[in-house]
Length: 199
Image 1 (cartoon, rainbow, N blue to C red):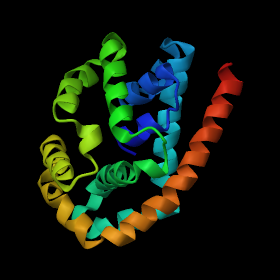
Image 2: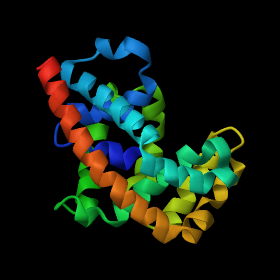
Image 3: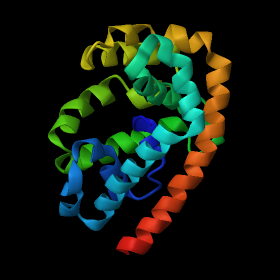
């Protein structure tokens, strides 16, 4: 899953959210160097990624996109699922997306020193272009696809991601709803497991 989903699935614990947000830059057992709650967030992030990568519904979405995107299909799926989470946010949280996003940006800025250097470099752009809120809009997703096309190897094809999402919109939207309900439940259970493990 992409940024919005990881932040959403962190619940209301600020430290878990920070861990979840920086997790891609924490390799191997380096998570052991972090405080308990941040460590939980890192491990939750890894669980979410593994769960998503192997879930049969996500595999269906990847298969739909793979003929054009090949090994980049999983990256595209992560971004597309964040689009549907943002679009249907009111189905998942009573707090408006705008309020959630603003609170998240504020937390990340206040905890800037806890972020990894790559995330520190990225955060100003995320806030300036309001990525998390704009995932719900066509224009926002086109900007995300364009940005990603510049950051991944052989990523030029991703520039046209919105066209392929639009062509399969209803199918992928239904796949998202099926998958995300199961992911939410699995992530919640994982947090309980981590609480039991680390206290």
